[in-house]
Length: 231
Image 1 (spheres, rainbow, N blue to C red):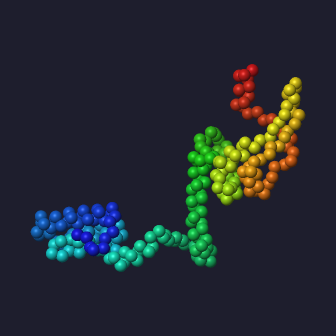
Image 2: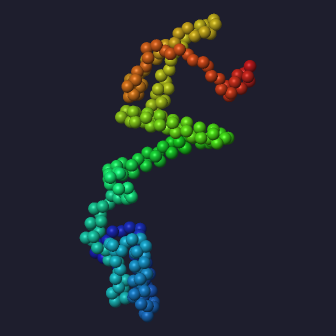
Image 3: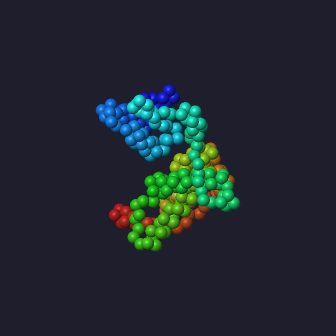
């Protein structure tokens, strides 16, 4: 049976089912002890830590659940609150510092998701030696720091890192080649649009007036195989 003040939850529904079962047991077993059912019900409440707000009582061989409405309202004031427990002395870290470091855990988890499944995709590990594996992981961590710097700078622009990089990817140098010999005769810097200028300006930078000179051309092994096949 319910008390006048009651809050229905899945756990309360299970307790009500148990109370109904206990009352049926009293009806079928006239010699059953009330203390035994109170002990069994108390163990259920203790297991789920509900003994503070909910109690069991037996009157005239009828089990009832009682809930303290006043105490329930006091506990409701703490809904959505949490406590952070630390063994650090106050001289080493204040309450605000502990709270800030706790919230930083979400950034750590987000960073690992980015490394494994997100923008960087550190997996699969296509390396064979321990040294290459460590270098691969170190490179990925350094790239993650660069990505975080981009995220901090572009967050006020309401853009993700992927969106910002795609936008800047369309800002490329125009190179003009000689038709006869195929030599480069001119390199022209692009004129960024408004959004591209804001993305670059978020770091206090701007595009140079003249295009930088071309460096050495690096051909990977995959590209060399493609060239051999085409030849």
